[in-house]
Amino acid sequence: MDSRQSKVIEKIEKAGLLEKHNQLITQGYTNPWFNYKLLKEYDGNLDQVIVVYNEHRKRKDEQNAKALKILETMGWLNKHQELVEKGFAQVKKNLKALLRTEGDIAKSIERLSNKKAIQTDQPIEQIIEQHGFKVQYEKLKEMGYDNEKRIVRLLLKFNGNLEPIIDKLLNGKERKHQHCKKREGKCEKKDKASQEFQEFKQKKKEFKKKLQQLEQSGIHRHKAVKLLAIWNGDTDAVIKWVNQVKPQAKAETQTLQEQQVHTQE
Image 1 (spheres, one colour):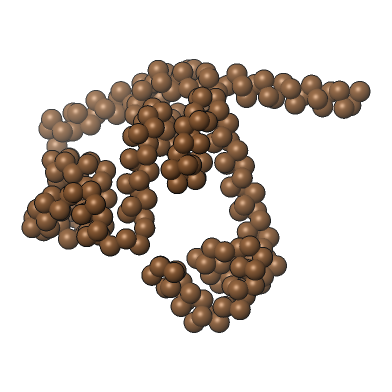
Image 2 (cartoon, helix red, strand yellow):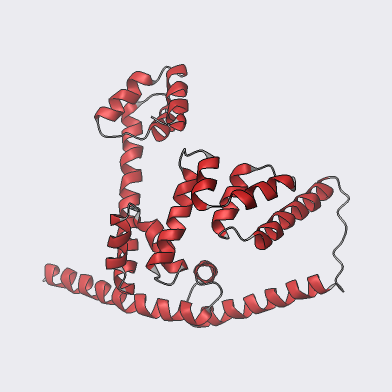
């Protein structure tokens, strides 16, 4: 049992819910954090907790089924299976990694491994040693960045490249400073003549054009925003992907309607 599980078991014991937690485990509901959250929320009512659990499982199964359909449409089922064999069993995460890397299995494994490393109970020093980022890590600490988890996450994300990491950290500090000034009622107006503001305005204009293009192609605005984020603003890639997914979904709907007509006859 790792330290995170130990913490939640302590919380369950303090709340006097250990017996009910054990009952849930015997019925196959083994996530201690979820058990604690639901038992607290429904005042220890086991029947209600089990109903919520089953609804959650049903939603998760539906989402996984959709993700598998997309993997099948993209021709990535073998790649997903390869990721599962490497220890990455979550369908949605595998799909997201493959979409972000345009189906590159090596990059997907690297991406998933980096996320997995920071989410484990492994000591930060050990993660740094394993990836060979000790020099960069110490340099960032010397510069006054003391949020260890964030430093590790950025080192993994940018593969130890300090330049984008420092840019990211500086931008974060700048935004925080602006937010604090705003809360004090002293937020200064942006200089509309500045190059930074003009660049922001141009990017916003380009993004709006891309949204309009996707809306004209029959993609809902909310969905278009998400797909542009996944495909790094590439409208052609978004349209191509949607056109691959749509015919299959249409064929399935048509088959279902035909089956219903035959049943009625």
